[in-house]
Length: 104
Image 1: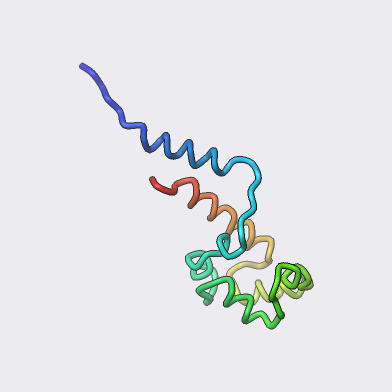
Image 2: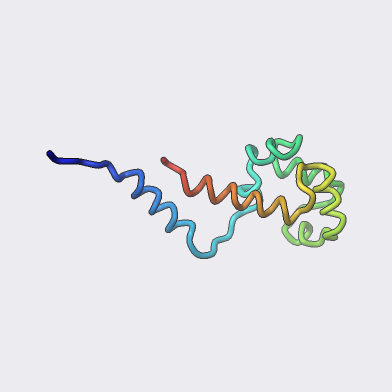
């Protein structure tokens, strides 16, 4: 009796894990995609959230210049998260999970 197994799913999972290993930069728009934003807020995109924040953001430098305490307060009021750090951690975990199982 012979046994054949299809390991293509495991091979794809391994490839995905290798792509995720190490450090990489992810754009905020990709990290906070529409699916994520819809689950944690009434916004359908990260751009909508930023536009509604009242802060003038036209560049990465503008975004970085937002006072942390004011941004945390806005995130707490506008999303299901109590802080920007909490939101980022959850978005990163969500992003990694999606990338890990992509194509499976």
